[in-house]
Image 1 (cartoon, rainbow, N blue to C red):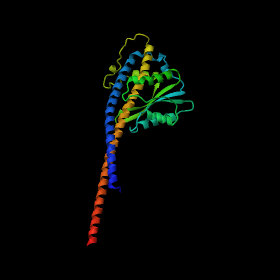
Image 2: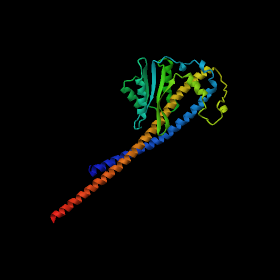
Image 3: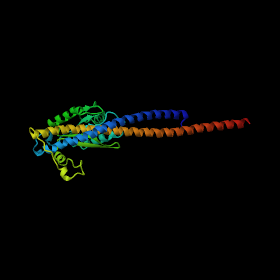
Image 4: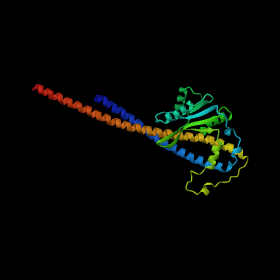
Length: 303
């Protein structure tokens, strides 16, 4: 059994660690609250903006735009969203594992290039010697749509020029503080079928208790100019909005994962302190018992 001095030193060390993890838990909880609010608010905006397409995208099959062009997939751009820092549980490991699984499925005719957002994903991709075309580390904790412009512009321009035939985003969906789901989603080319289904099914999940006639009701907008150009412009903004939404989802997932990781660490530290305190009391009691035995043995010898 360790000595009392060593146990006291360990108790003091664990208490200091607990203070740090508790402080990090509180900071992450504060950031998570703001990140979740931004994520939910953005979801509502995306839902309302999509309703505009209900009336203006009637001739979606006739649209000719680079963002709708489907080509034989030879070059793929994967946007990997991770964090700059650790101590956030399995958040980074899960999405990196999902990206590596996709890369392992790469065949001889397909080349996957990486655009990393966050240092953890960048380090993981460089470790396996993947082609990284760009890295973004300086995004703020609370991302705005302006911060997404360089990322979306690079992705859209590279796809429009034909350098890549498909653009994917690996991110983490925020479901709850206890549940985050790694996901990979295609953003380019914009699928006409998916967009049409989005338009046709808009509102089905929003007002389940309303009558079918109300669900099918559409608003007629007065459009000035070419409708095709308008749809193409909306598709461009929708692509940018998707990347922005995925960054918000990932940020909320990161903060909630870090909060839970630090909470678990604080609880584990408390349990360790209790165990060490019990060990210290046993060691102290053993020392007292030994000293009493030595004194008693000395008295018997003297007699």
